[in-house]
Length: 154
Image (cartoon, rainbow, N blue to C red; front, side, top):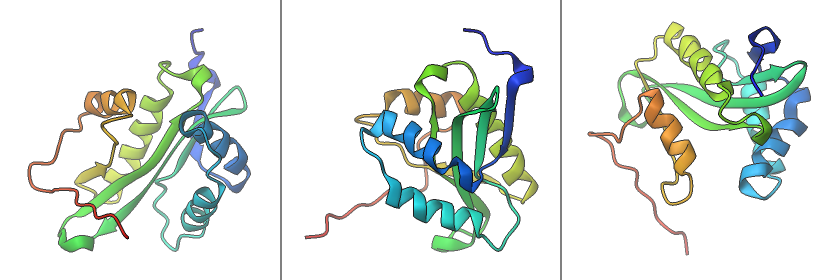
């Protein structure tokens, strides 16, 4: 199916998108991560700043994708304004139709306007080859100066 560009709308996420976001995420994770998305929606919808970094994609009035992120200024000892993509998803019926690309382009426009000079994200490289490929095509590469550390909590 080819998309009619006139039917695609990229807009800020809204509270009423909650169920569809959880549904799309569950298509990939196999579980309904409602508590995670409750916290995320609370954080992004009640933010004190006006930087819109969490977006929805509607096609013909139906939510078909989302991207959520945040902007940091100086956290973790990083001096420049940075943005982080925390999660994103596209309805499996709309994969490879440019929805993720359009969401990402709008995310970049918004964070660039906020003075962001670098965007980070984390991808599980053992399970998310499609997502890793998406980010590579978008211009991401492994960091030459940062390392992601993890520790299992006993």
